[in-house]
Figure 1 (tube, rainbow, N blue to C red):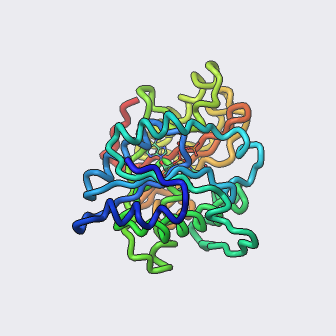
Figure 2: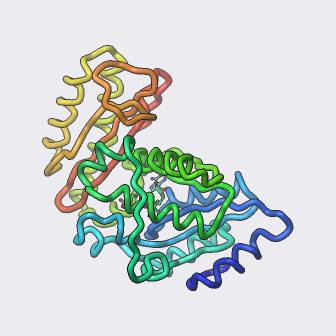
Amino acid sequence: MQIIRALDGLELGVAMVRQHGNTLALVPTMGALHDGHLALIAEARRVADRVAATIFVNPLQFNDPKDLEKYPRTEEADLAKLEAAGCDLVWLPTPDQLYPAGFATSISVRGVSERWEGEHRPGHFDGVATVVAKLLLAVRPDIAIFGEKDWQQLAVIRRMATDLGLGIGILGHPTVREADGLAMSSRNALLGTDERAQAVAIPQVLGEIARQILAGESVAASLANGKARLLAAGFSGVDYLALVDGASLEPLETVGENMRLLVAAKLGTVRLIDNIPVTSEQQVSW
Ligand SMILES: Nc1ncnc2c1ncn2[C@@H]1O[C@H](COP(=O)(O)OP(=O)(O)OP(=O)(O)O)[C@@H](O)[C@H]1O
Ligand SMILES: CC(C)(CO)[C@@H](O)C(=O)[O-]
Ligand code: BAL
């Protein structure tokens, strides 16, 4: 696996992995890798001849400086996991490589970025769209893969890639969960033992609400009960718990075609997000 740190080594590194017309899939990450990330690498191996990853904790997308400061960083273990997973190239840019002095450009995606995470983390999606555009333009893969755990992020990135005509396929991968249903997330490492046990209420409540909505119960009442359940389980706050259209991210008050439940809630100082589809074929196994 090639480990690239300098921007001027990237072009040669990418040319080497692309030799003989190999296709390339990119998996952008912020490190602290877990099995969710490794599933994206495995998917990248299925859809392309060669796989690249990036590890970059992007300061531009952290609206809360404390969140940036405490974000887990495990570079050595991450590199070992990527190598074992069959990644061919990893690029670890520094902030000054991506954001040279005087950096003044921002990509802002209207519509899909405005509600939910966009409302609760001002500037977050501008930071995500800007860095993802820069990473994609620097590596120029054929395909880039992102997790459905960050459902709204995936919608923002798809819109940005289409609008800018990047010519890079954006692929989503289903959320990988722990045995009890909790979505894997780098931020789970920040949970204490009691908080980790409480966190399972998130997938449980999402599953319950989905079943209630499919059984014809009122959307508003199901969401209100779910919120009360999260607070009773020990969550200190629920930023949002909503039924949305999975493509437009607009809220749904009644049953629709492409329903998705989204949640963001805080356990102590740790903020967790999750989402599930609401479909009649739904099999919630936790
Ligand atoms: N459980 C998961 N299943 C599938 N994809 C995931 C999962 N967790 C993260 N990803 C995806 O991995 C990519 C990198 O995410 P990132 O490095 O931010 O990890 P993370 O676990 O989402 O961290 P955090 O939730 O703390 O931001 C993103 O496309 C993200 O959606
Ligand atoms: C897509 C991403 C790597 C951009 O920094 C980040 O938001 C993430 O890890 O989900
Ligand atoms: N995984 C989404 C990136 C973030 O929380 O900043």
